[in-house]
Every structure is written in structure tokens, then in C-alpha cells.
Image 1 (cartoon, rainbow, N blue to C red):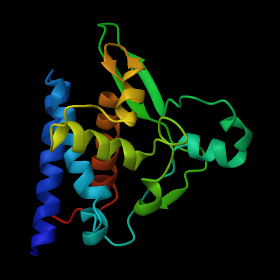
Image 2 (cartoon, rainbow, N blue to C red; image 1 turned 90 degrees about the vertical axis):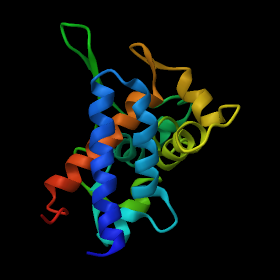
Image 3 (cartoon, rainbow, N blue to C red; image 1 turned 60 degrees about the vertical axis):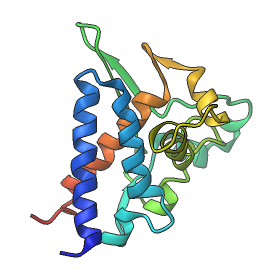
Image 4 (cartoon, rainbow, N blue to C red; image 1 turned 180 degrees about the vertical axis):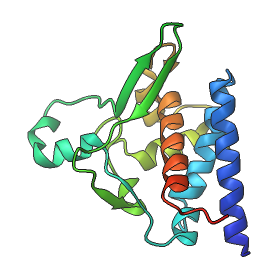
Length: 182
């Protein structure tokens, strides 16, 4: 097994563990999720496309909406890239929503989709969390994180459950697509 394949499997293992920790109450594990997502999706030679060339992810709902109705961008300050549900016990879960067409996109294009606004893409959010809070500790938030902190999903700043939702989707889709050989 190549080093890249070993790193890929290890990254998925860490991603799954960090998501589990988040759901067990270790909210700060979203930082680990962002760091693994950066490695898998956003690095110059991203690990996912290095080991699975041609791998595709589902287009986000807002991307399709803005492609078919570009005028929606006029005056749009914030995009909610998914659905927030709250159970009877008060716990919440956020999940991404996808285009009705079911369209798939190359990873390189997928990470360039608008996420929180026209200027804040999937890549920008992942890299901001990983670079400012995960792999590094910068003294200040960047504009992306300031914007994300303006909106709360229940108790959490919007970037935390959104990073978890991206991680959950990528993990499930990689496993469900047969991209993991056991």
C-alpha cells in the first residue's frame, strides 16, 4: 500500500473519530475535522483526488439555486447551506442540503461553491478553521470566521456545525461510493 493510500485511510479514521467526539460533547473537535478536510480536499495536491482521481461530490443546493436564478445574489448577505433540526431533547443536528438535480462535481470545483455567502466558499471556510483554529492558533479571526460567528445554529457559531456537516457528508459519501477498498 502506498504512503498516500495509508495517509488517506488514516485521515478517514481521524475524521470519523473527531465527528464522533463532537457528537459526544467535545465541540472543539470541529477543529480536527477542519484540519482533516483541508488535507483531503483543499491542499494543493489534495489527498482525496490524489488517491481517487476523478472522485466527485454532490452539488450544493444553493449553487444550483444561484446558477438558475443569479438575481438571488442581489442583496444576499448570508446563505444557510443546509438544514438545522432539533430533537425533543434539545439536541440539534445540521446537515448540508444538495441540488435537486443530484449533479456531481469534481472536488476542485466542489470546494469553490459559495457556502455562507458569495465570497465565502467551502474551501475558504475549511482553510479558515484549519489555519486559524485547528493546525494553527492565530491571535485574530479572519473575515470568514467573523462572518460565521455572526450567525448561531442553536448555541454554536455557524462554522462549527457546518464543518461537522461537511465532514459527515464527505466521510459517508467516500464510504458509500465504494472509494474504500477493504
